[in-house]
Length: 285
Image (cartoon, rainbow, N blue to C red; front, side):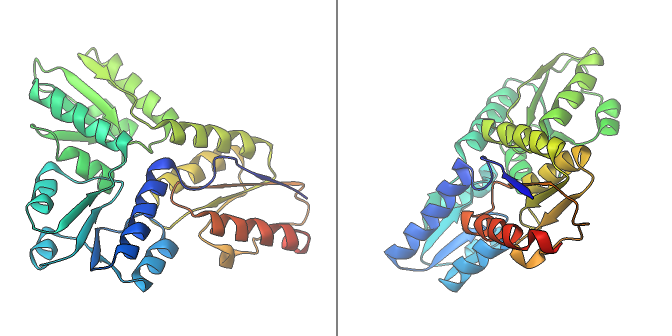
């Protein structure tokens, strides 16, 4: 059985930067908090908790803190929340991904000019929630073709479209096409990060030649879920797992090629453990 591991599998730049920052802050001593889990990977978050890093989830939680370091995760936060943290008296460490921060800047600038903002992404995702908070005007989030077809902008408004950095690139193109076909004054900026596009492209290519495909990611990881969605279109036998504990898989034993990819919040050690176990247990499927 041949095993193909995606070269792009694992931490992206923004996630690596955020995680490294938390571990560096641990070594400096003092109470450490992250606003929300630093990344969407339960194993990493559990390890940080074992080292004394606490997760807080609301502005009310911030008000209860009197000392320590508060780390803004790579997904970013709203402008209002950023100001709350900055004025809290805590040491603020901002690990917002630069690609996410770029979207904040676009949204802030374009909304100030009077444009209506549309974010193509997953409603409720922390990155999307954070981005919405940088607009001076109400924001519309579009995730499906039905939502794109039913969207009607305010009369006379220019529409500025941006994307969640980890959204499905093909879906983004499809949804933008629907919006532009409606003859509205639409300006679309593909703000899906390059690492996401490359990861999705490679996953699709591997899945197209695989008899079975494994996607490794946290249960709440949006970008991992999109990799699973992309791979399953190419390879019906696509499996979403979190760690090696989810092995073995229900395969027939006749699979000649098994592909493996992983989301941007999956650490290298988990990928290596899965790779090792698939390799040694592959012929037992």
